[in-house]
Image 1 (cartoon, rainbow, N blue to C red):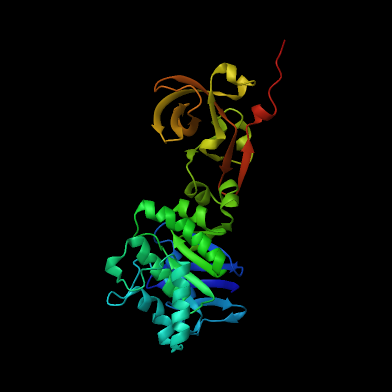
Image 2 (image 1 turned 90 degrees about the vertical axis):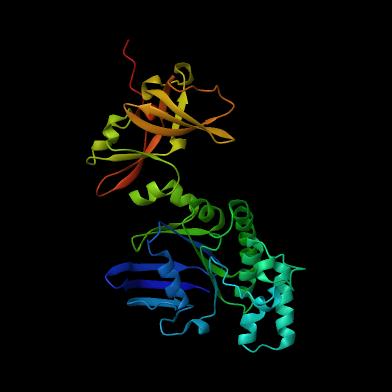
Length: 354
């Protein structure tokens, strides 16, 4: 199903939940709505489902405006974060529920349910009740029930929020594979960056009722379009005056600019490690955090804390140790513009006077 949303607006009393939102979703894509709590993600999802009505704007499926079409006639499957399974029904009957409501033939119901039981890895659990299942298994039943009537659009509202971390990780990969096999257009709401990055074809960053940016996880991380996106995605450090950093003194040419510096933009080393020493800053190691496969290092430069990674293959640093710091690039922004800038001294070093 191809989805078009145009100028969607929604108030709840005096609260402006969704503000002039427009976007397109291609058929078969898996889209993650990512953002802070209260940003408008679930409101957008519920309007797509028909559970809320927009104050203005249009929602179109395959070119047909569906604003006035009731939820049950939109061809949508919905998965909630709390499973919402019927406790008195078996796995089989939970999955079959939507088909029974549609009065599908018994033979078709059995065939479709068994197909989904196989697809979702629930074979052998058909006669069990929800309380006899793990959290991950209950969520798989919820997915199967949503898919049973063969919807054209699958909506997922924080589907893994009620599941513990280990099972959640497993279900992410499983969901990605399931959606690819079924080929259904899907939209899921999450506030978990890792979840969105791992699962989604594209991410829409939602903040204060607006779409800040839409794109692939890599594009959004590499080229954030707004300061909010830059600070929301990934780890980073903010420096209020970019021009105080070596190699970025020209940042003020576009007006006062702030610098957002990601860990991978920073390199730590000793004097002999850098061919262009003039491009580096003097730093002091303040804290080290072991991350299993690497160190997360907090280093102080000109009274400002920066955060970077360091390989376990390199010599181990100690708190209080002096170190050279090379900032390769930074994401700069001011009130009117944002851009990625390379360290000027690294790219175009100052000539050595003899």
